[in-house]
View 1 (tube, rainbow, N blue to C red):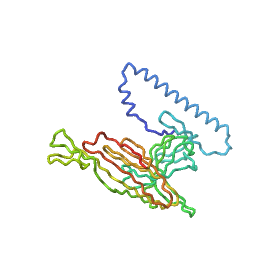
View 2 (cartoon, rainbow, N blue to C red; view 1 turned 120 degrees about the vertical axis):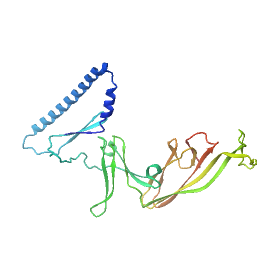
View 3 (cartoon, rainbow, N blue to C red; view 1 turned 180 degrees about the vertical axis):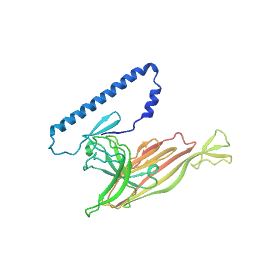
View 4 (tube, helix red, strand yellow; view 1 turned 45 degrees about the horizontal axis):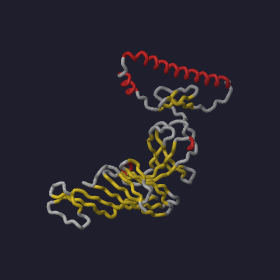
Length: 308
């Protein structure tokens, strides 16, 4: 039995072949045939080697647990199960691919409105690498189910999540939803405007009027201004352990993000910061968002300014 993990891009391959000139078809077929012969020979010798090893064990030897041999082939992964299996028509059969191991995980609390809505969610992060006692093969598509010890020699069900193919070195992220022991509120505080520019009588003349020294002309209209919004993110950690909180906020337009939270760019329109909330504590995370509007808007990105 040989199982292939990964998407077989047959449609894309056919489309590529259709564009090959007729003068190159013979060479292409020769190369394809050579590659298939090499793969077939490798499979033949691997099978013979395993059969010889089983024959050397003798008929009276105790049968060992079947070994699943995994090998990479381009962007695909092939799982080869030693020996033979009998699967009746219309039936299915399960075999173990991964043995249970003690895998370290990271718990992170996230606020990402485009992904999770206006709520704080708890995420289990597991990395598919050797340091996590994984990483020998990619993890195929499937369902991840999370249980925990209930303290009475049993397990309590937490969640199940469909996962996609996880390459070696990548992260497996399991969303457990909101945690009742960690409360999170986003509060909009003071809002004000400044740097107000007026366009005089539809001409190319502009005057700034918010400094109190220039009167507003009757025939003028607002041409640009800066809008300031002060935010407070109130976090209450009722657990007995410190938690890692990641906040990611996306702002369209020309934005200045001012805070003392050590924020960084996730992308050109998104500010992100990560903080640790002590156990049994309430913490207020404050920042100011300045949006340049009208004539004041020069570009579409977020500028991060660190303040004390």
